[in-house]
Length: 611
Image (cartoon, rainbow, N blue to C red):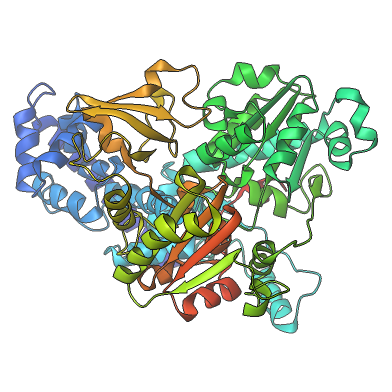
């Protein structure tokens, strides 16, 4: 280390010592844990609203006062607390609080990583990205802060492998040679490099666990027999019999349901409430993969585990399922890597598919099933999947009269809502004889001017107008679970119909399989109805895994910045007979399909598989 580096390190150690001494003095002067008045005074002086004070106290527990006295920036571990609020509290608690206080930077770095996971789905971030964010938060020595966070366990660091693709061009070769020539022993270079990955324990451990379990399953398959020896004539079943872990793309819900039925001791699951309903309609008896991940004994008892809609399986649930599967068992992950992925951090299914050289050699066994387009709707699906929109003539069919796909142009959000209601309530029932649960309206998001909330208000007024006797709901309303109620077996995305409503709560008939054999799931108390939303319209993400005869997809101008190929495909593939696109996004829709495959996520699972 050069002289400047030694001086900086000496100054940082002095700051650490000063911070520790200040924390000790503050803790000594702090009131006992049973005296919350001082804590409330601190939080009030920092400008915290009453709801935030309650949330902080509940999260930190009985010794919240002592914790904050010792480290006021520790409140950043409480969901919803921003650095500005933590800094305001620190100025109240700590005399002469400094931006580079080690306690502050050790709290900021995990906060930045958690925010990246929550907002962008990233399980890791490059050290350069973290350093830049620290600078914007007033930290003058970002390199030292990162080094300190790693040393004290506030963050984990990994080296991102750098490799050269087989078809690399001259520019890529030059970049590779430059990176390869860098001095990896230079701590400053390492701690500010985009190829140094930082992570919090939660996601790092989940990715490592998933990688190790995948390697174990791939290496330990035992003999398993399908019913009637069907592996001799079915390539998919043959692959499952041969391999401990098989990745499947292109399989329909019916094909996945049939696969589960091909093995006497198979467990079939989906992480999607809509996907579960689709499997039930295909004649299967599936379980919720999110609940199954919490039942390792049931997973361990299965000889074959088949997960449908695997692209929607969260990283932690996926890791838990693979870990719980016994040596010798067979796991099938069937999903679509091109459409929308899990809403949580990570890319469990896609990372497994994209891994070319895991530690056990080669790539994970996979089966790709392909289907030829049979009409305008499947032709549209195929074109979007490959990054383009088909010509209008193709959507009109061979004779120019097909109504499988209809485009309804609109100019603004209000018109989009009006036309979506008109199509769902009048046009589709009149033209196709489809109505009620056979027609589903979907939106890009919930809160845009033509999002699910606005659409639901208009659709409820048309289909089931009422006073909203309980939290805005009336008997006859369609509802969806937006906040999990696990104590009732509801993990989010479940839909149902309100059969009775009063001031005390709602009686709901849940769509299969959630309403079958579970009386407790039929009632939701008034205090819990905030976990529900009207479901005449769903977001595209909420609808994933579902299939409806007719779908009305609303792409308005306000939601255009959120459009991606994955989202467009996620909307299109929901329809089985007819799709109406209420289109107000202009050129943004075609640009998204052509140029934006999905929102990028930075993850480490595919690297962990190579370790």
